[in-house]
Image 1 (spheres, one colour):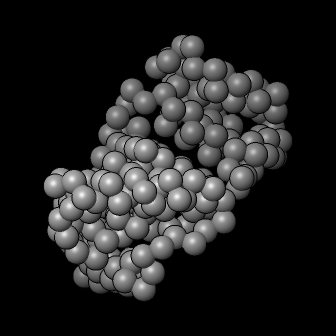
Image 2 (image 1 turned 30 degrees about the horizontal axis):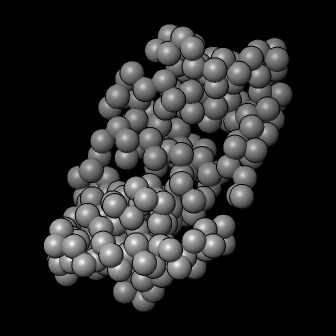
Length: 225
């Protein structure tokens, strides 16, 4: 009951956010192409598959705008879809991916958690959630999400390497080493996993040095542009 109450509250909070502001005003998002994107939105919105006022049409429009690089338009359309159908997982999932790609980790976490709670608990959703939590610095939670990702799709070398990095940043020498080794077995030419394992080996099993190296890599990886 407590989980359900918290979940419903989370959904309501996102819907209220969408109702109060359908624009994303975040630093770092592209603005120089806004006039061109505005014309693109106008053209697409006139097409039958995107012109409806239903959630599905808005979701299709958001997906197309995201594919074409219009972040602001995609976010607005995902949020309109959420307002129209707040119990549908797909627009939350798409919104979470776009926000993650543009370093808005807090809102990405909220959107992806809602998508998972509404039934979109697949490997990719957990992976994106893990990445967003890494960006927020919530390492135990990131590790839990990435473990769900690798359990849902055990052939994902990237998710396994990210799990290793999170464990490394927590000083878990053995767990990080196992994760990097598994990632390399899955994808022997995955250079990121090799580089991370080399960084782990340079710490020579020292927990403090391992943690320091992992945190340094995370900071560089998720620095806001």
